[in-house]
Image (cartoon, rainbow, N blue to C red; front, side):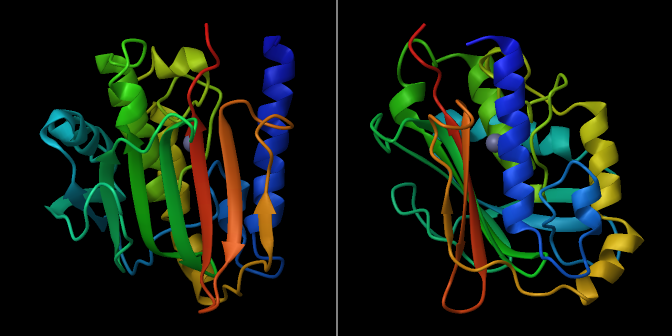
Length: 248
Ligand SMILES: [Zn+2]
């Protein structure tokens, strides 16, 4: 597939994701920037986000490094806390991001998966899952690909969306094996997401969309699928799946 076509597919999935996950009324300031339109509740910055560590030892150094990289931000600070779940289940816990790895299987097709639970614009909890079924394979057992993936998923957990510049938030194949840290523009986007304007917008936030959205991988983005689902308790869960590359 040509880069041009790939680019438009990424654009399309991005626009659909915004259309379907952004509240229709007020409180959409975050959608003006390269964020998901979702953010952690805050009164002042930096906002501390707790990352529950359920990772196996092989991931610890990547996790520490990604935390240190994102903590260069002036507005968000990730803090490692004891995990409350296990890799296989990776259950969400309120006010935390639970970070997990396990052999979730290659049939799933994904390297990493982030789920955000939110009410209105406000994230209530998140989970990050890293798929060892791929990282145990020679093709992905690569320090850059590992660092990229955990950096990428943690970026989603802070409220960032995809980008096309050099950054771990770029979901392309090239990026997976080359870009293993945030880009400067990611920090600018975080500044906008965790700004006074968005804090005020959060107060006026309305409930998210209803229904289930499944964007088929083949029809849209070859690397990422975004789904959004309204829960019975009024929260909405949006899921970002980073797919493994097609066979080279
Ligand atoms: Zn992603």
